[in-house]
Length: 514
Image (tube, rainbow, N blue to C red; front, side):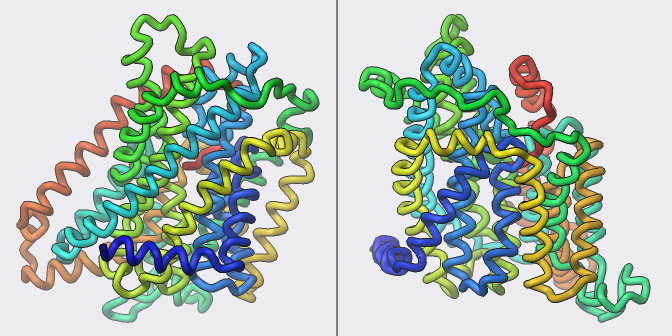
């Protein structure tokens, strides 16, 4: 009853005119950003962070805007996948396998509408799971001490390298780089300066928003500049949509698929580091094994091959919010960016979030329910409008992204040094992406580095220097087991996923994002 009462209070907050407006705006912008290959949810949220803060929005409207962008981008990623065989982001890669053949067969409109319905189903039931599971996980999280939190952060680093990472060594390097950047500034215990080189602007450390906008948004601009891609993504002109709505038989045929994929995707999202890419891959693979073992229809335009990955990746998106809100550990790259937003708003995610800021967390959850219905209402009748986003020339789009980044960061900090630092992070992001080093562990290191250090020191102080405290409880041992498994599993599954996708992947490099 307490959960239902809290959710009712959340709807009272989310249904205000201001919050409804920001939810609708976020859904619309997110869908457009998701449709553009290379941007994706993480980049989309990063681009809009400066706007949210420069407008002086409160915690609840800021989070509603940015999470609506997150959900909208997950919806929008399917558009270029189906129409052009170019995934809007990594989770949408599996949608190409059957979505593009459907489009070539004249069923583009049906494939887009079916994927929109599937996205709604996955996201809606994942939000229901968030309502039920997050408060229960909070009760478990109250058992955590400093040692358990240190192991939990280690688990996040071990797993958030991503299922798409080509080399776990690169993920380790990225995490170490992020931790090194987090060490810049004043020591939390002694107050001594570390890696500041006497520069006064670095005494307080590096603002993670500057790092996020630089690494995600500006690096995307540099990638486009390098390839001189001035034309539109869908340069061949407007794409034929055809019949818009799938018939009832097609939807009924996909209902069992949606049910199975919702469960798989949600579980993949709740596991720290698995994220939407794994949810999409597992959903598609299981469905193929269940209904098409001989490979006669999947990969050739089977509607179930569109529904499965779309349900899976959207369910994983909702599931990834569970560990972020309940434990303070992001479940995906985009929730790592949202974690930075919470910290910037002086809101500490974790077990006490539901007690200290119930208006924020339950207002956000209620807004997710509302946003799902908004996205369903937007994505089917306006699918023709969203496909025209593919016709926007990148020579116009990329300067807009750069302008938003520069103006937004300067409006927040008022410091030209921070703007130049953001450019430096943009160059760093460009180099890392050229080397195929994942960006998410870098961000995670910057976000969690200080908390990890503080909990490590506390644990060592409590144990009087005895290292066995980190394996001194069943909870800690269980977390170590999950961390080791999560680090090794992508080495096996990632190769299978890459082989499955590579034959269908376009020649242009698809930028990273969750």
